[in-house]
Image (cartoon, rainbow over all chains, first blue to last red; front, side, top):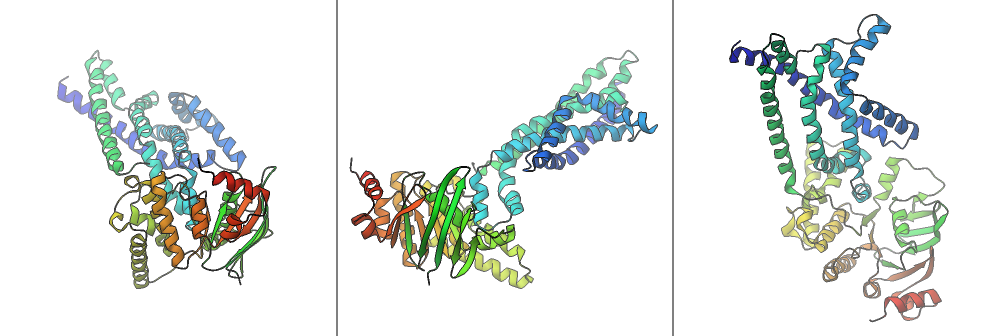
Length: 214
Length: 260
């Protein structure tokens, strides 16, 4: 097995890794906002239910959640509810949305009451205040914790292999089955590049938002 | 007829009675200073006028129109419309940090425009007049050269002057100030008070909650001294400062005006 052959095969795995990463991010970012609204709701039952849900999702290993989503519906329906890939996305999106929701909540609750009141006395609607006044300030404040979470997601994609999704680690492990170990270690390079690019991107955003202090 | 009539406003926070029945009137173009110690209910009264708190009892009339009646439930839209009769300048400025000075002024009126259904041309004209108004107001508060600056680049006094201009863009009938200089360094209070004094000359009706006794004495047409949720004394500055009737007013004034 030559270097290029291995690289090509790992790149195919990386494609799955990227797909899980991108889909999870695109879906979990807005869903997290919805969940954070739930946990901050003035309607107490909704707030409690949301908090219990977040506790369960954050309290159970993501790997187990992937397995549950894929296998458990099969016990009751006789056939899986989601495909393998669909199960991974469903579990990842719900899991990450819960983590994001707590970061959003922290950011939203850190915005001074005076910002809302200033919007109110100027006759803005609640949604105008949220989207035009509060949200941008929240984004600035949560950028650092969000970059942490997003970087963790890159590496969590490796958990998809428990239900036979051939992401990059799984692709490398297939070589290991034939006694070829170095491709497994080689995957670290791909992760490092991926995370390195993300760090640069977050650094760029942080700089972009540095034009004001609050 | 008085521009503003406040009738029997009462407000409780839990079991604490903060306002125990406030009555007063204000004529158009008058400046009312509200003085009193912390916890006397001054700020709560101002917040009730601006719908940031909902009074439990009482009513408020502007120009003969009922803007608030404690017995009536108002929805969000009604509140938004009615509160625009009032403007409020906060102690802590509360400028929007991510917007520059000009954008701080134009944001609210521009968003209000979106609620109206206007044709393209009408919209353009309206937007231009908002910009023009904002430019005028910045000049009015002496900050024309700062229109592209961000709030974090301004001194406290400059920020508060921007906040005053921002409140004026909405053209409120009555502009309220909640201790506008309390968060400022002493050398910066003058520039803000001068702007407020200047507005008086332009016929703005204003209510100023303040600890600046000299300002209340020299600028206000009417002074209210509040203590424990009631109006303890009301009158012209000469009456309240020169010949206070109530013992509480006397005690407060002698403490406030004491030279150290």
